[in-house]
Image (cartoon, rainbow, N blue to C red):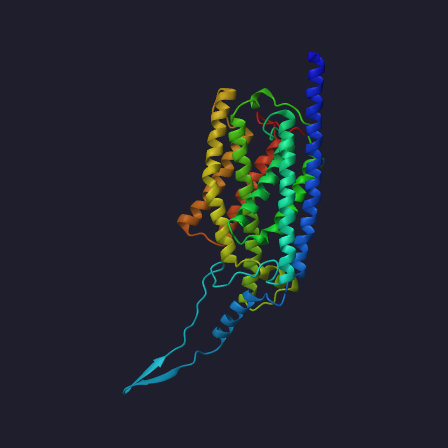
Amino acid sequence: MTLAAATDLAAATNENLANISNTLIYSSMAVYTLAFFAYIAEWLLGSRSKVGRTAAALTPAKADKAAAPAVTVKKGGSTAVLERPKVVVRAAAGQRDVPDGPGAHGGDAQGDLYGRIAISLTILAFLIEFGGVLARALSVQRAPWGNMYEFNITFSTVAVGVYLALLALKKNVRWLGLFLITTVLLDLGLAVTVLYTASDQLVPALHSYWLYIHVSTAIFCGAVFYVGAVSTLLYLFKDSYENKLAGGGTPGRFANSVLDRLPASASLDKFSYRVNAAVFPLWTFTIIAGAIWAGDAWGRYWGWDPKETWSFITWVAYACYLHARATAGWKGRKAAYLALIAFGCWLFNYYGVNIFVSGKHSYAGV
């Protein structure tokens, strides 16, 4: 076999792998869509008669405040003892003594069945998408995150992987499923339409082992930050729902059937804080690794390139969030707004800087 023929065969093999990758990505989207409908069925067909825990926890508190406390008299020898009933004083928003909701299935066997089907489909779609990412890497013999298309398909794979890992650790996060799969489908739809880039080799500056270290940690951090942002957003809705109930309001049917199945606002607030706090040190390492790589590639560790600048802004935003939680005692809505601002900085660092701003990190491929 001649050298030219061998080269053509290698190119054809690479092209075949690239086509296999595309097929697997589209196939994963189809399975994710089935999982999406299964999650919808879990929410719709789960029992609504078993929800109402939040209302049950908050409504009596209002009644207790309206009624005058009764006084009972006990006689202990010749001394009358006045004993007042306990008055439960609830803390500020996000700290009420409210039980977690029963979950998307509403504690119902039928809803639970659809939830298990949804999780099984999510696992299958995850494996198919992972195969698509792996085939993309093999098609060019490099890490599969050299442009925005590859970053997107890898990011969504890791985000679903984080969700499944939390489930495997027996964490009660099935409420994340519908919201996660919805945005994963949007992400993959954006990837295969607007951001798609043909399989190709890297620019010279990216030929480094730091590509595996720096970009992989950035993807993982983004996936975990995303999980934290979803729980933060759901916290804001659940907290408003609890506030309305505590104030004597009557939420609509949608709020009663959906929001009451979620964990309590305090649980959502704590979960998002722990997720963001756990991954923040790795984000710090990601920035340091990028600076070291910049020193090797461009001869300077930091040059306030747009990507470097927004990575640092994201770090500062999350640092402010964690610092406010730890020292200023910021919990609840104020901390949630800070967390969402920080995640917004991360999103702009990826989409905005890569698409609209030119710099040394302009490898978007769009």
